[in-house]
Image: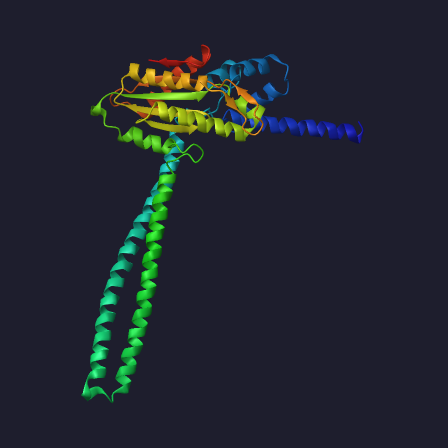
Length: 345
């Protein structure tokens, strides 16, 4: 085989390697040999039966589940399965980072209190010393004591310099405290849509008052969102995400609306029973379906963009991951039965 043939085979091998890596990342599988074998079997024969089955199951941007991979002849090793949408581990990591920020802020608070107290003490001492020095200078008995006056003047100057430095330190500490508070707030907010993120949603879920009335959980997903990104680019997709986030926030005003990740949104509805929650989500669904999105740079229409949703009532004492799993199943039911609909149970 000539050099050109060897180079061509090398390029093909590199391309397959890259596609296997992308496949594992897309389905959140660890780089375990068992997962690599399954990905290789699917991607090395693009026209094969396995590739066709996977294409059918993932149409619309779905990720393969553990059950689907095993049904297709693959295996999922421990710790390498596709995670649930709730991603409790990710929230735990977010909380560790938040704890570090909170610890730093507590230390800054102590430092700010100390510098403020020292500033007050040195200011009072400097004022008293200046008054004493002036009294010394006016005293007839001390008028020829130039050394005492020089020492007092030097002390006053140094105290005033210390006061200035302490004032600066106090101001810097206050600025840092404000920045840390902003950082904690930002840690709970999605930077693209401005909605709260998973950590903010987890806080809202944990802090809800069960006796205050019924609570419902809704999971929403943009139908075939991958098509928007593929056909029009990610900047257009980002604008669609923002528009749909605004629509959900408007329809569910007074409730907690979060961007849960990717094209998924989670909503915590307080004081609303299941029927009322389903009505709110269906109104949001209809609003989104009625919009006519366009690429603002080219004016080209994006086509109809729709959302699907799963809504469930949160049971007393129920953990977040249990409610999420039930809402997730309802969301998949909505997608599997035609999309652009709300399933509630």
